[in-house]
Length: 362
Image (cartoon, rainbow, N blue to C red; front, side, top):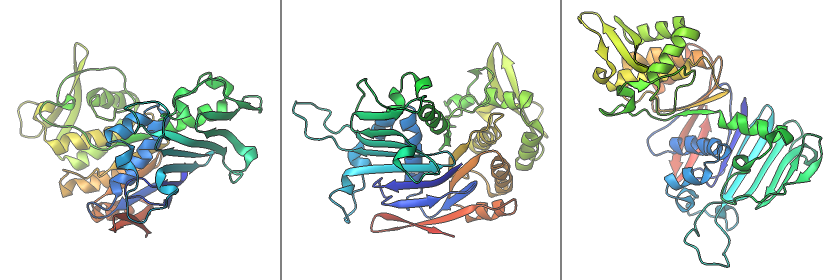
């Protein structure tokens, strides 16, 4: 479980620290920084998957993601720092601008990994517990024999060491941290437009995990039917959609979602379902995965859902938190109140002052 997240100099998040529990809800008005914190955590996972540069470029480059408020420190404002402490390890990543290069290049705003560290939890970042220490392109590791060694190969300065780790069996602790972080799951939004993959038949295979874009919805739904908690899935869907029943069809390996509705003489195809119906289906299949992850992040899952569906969503989130740690950003105090009927959670409220996100633990 993630115990602590620290974010420094990422967009509006200037020196933010959060203590996490099993279920965490973050709410606040538009523009207060909820999505920035979500994206910062997602960036940690992207670094573990070798996607640090591509994710930063999608946000406009490091020059746009770096803190740009008026209260600047000449040293810290040049680096973006992300760290997480879990039950097993403490990981820190520091990213900055490149130093002045002695040769001409048009990539002079590529993000540069300045430092990267892993400590085993329980030793308060003591040198004896450090299994990865990186300063620019110099990397020191603890190998399988417990020896401190220097990484001999060259590494790309604009990517995390995780994406360049060869022979992971020689560095089991570092490899385990990488696998843990990159197996976190993030669900920000599902494209349910007219031509989206969710609305079209898709070639399917057994899928215990819903993809981030939800395009394998039908196959993932059928996987739960066959090897997952179909009773709970049925209960949640009946609560959200009274007098409706969902099922999957397979036409020559192309899977499609279907819905029977009382009063209709034929089932509806996914292309005919409402946006809210498809989004709720995606959330249900994602959260009731037969292979639950250690950590799931949801960004405003109540979007486009009718208020009558919020009780079912609250129960769904509560049930999922029994098996996965959940980070949930929301606009809806009502959703938080409904979740409280099922169990306890950590609640944070965000606000914005002078371009800086402020966080209040409630």
